[in-house]
Image: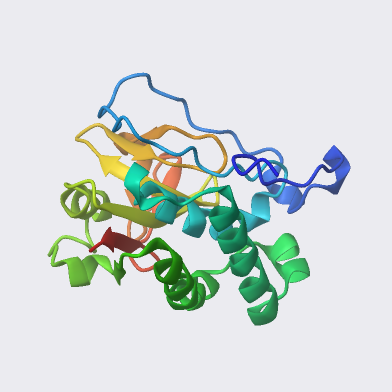
Length: 220
């Protein structure tokens, strides 16, 4: 199995949800924070757009690993299979394919997945909300709060994009101009000027981000 493309071949007319077919992806930028020499590639969702939440959980954990952790393909395949089995039991894969991954489901999956991950990885991962990280501006400017929370490379964040592109993604870094991603749909970055906090009207900006579903995963 190719662990960088854990996808299911489907015909175009079989893609769900139908409302997402016309969504435009953000522009990709070629500048930004230099990645570390060691970087696993994110799992790619392919046509399985509604499963972006499950892919995001696994990709966030992949971002926290190091070469000497010794985690091979079988480990990641097993972890991804475990995420899908828990999601199926809690909500049902068919419902996820129809409706996407709701925030409560990702919140419920994280403790179970982390317990499984830590048993095989040999290190612990803590999960924090932006308020628990201690950033006072987490409600008014979640991107600024994330910039501070992700200042070191021991952390990654699960973020739910809303607005013109409804999608769970992983944020690896935030700079004054851009949000840098480790994403299952091939996205590399977003302009911060394109993102509005959820309490404001979108006002022409392409994306809305609420601080509530954001979870910062930090390697201990």
